[in-house]
Picture 1 (spheres, rainbow, N blue to C red):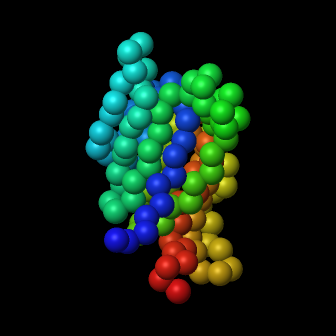
Picture 2: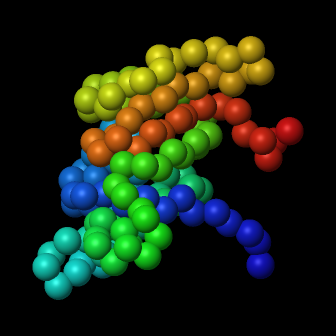
Length: 129
């Protein structure tokens, strides 16, 4: 069995997050499970071979782990940072670091999603070293 890591985030409005992640960052919805109140309890979205999981912030999670929506930070490798950056910007993502060529060879940018989670996208891949 291979090891995989799946960033897991919380959103106050996970339904809006699905739309934002599709439009701004190019994710595709894989699966969604709704709570009785209609909010998203668990969602999975894919971008190529990468996958994230997330759901709606609830009081149980806050009490148990101190988790709050908007506190995550994710880095993801992408092949074409220029077009990805343009898509994110066109969709209204809050760009916090413009597209930059780094001295270690990566080309990347950073943006906040609609609830403040920080997303960085670039060409640096530590597994390809």
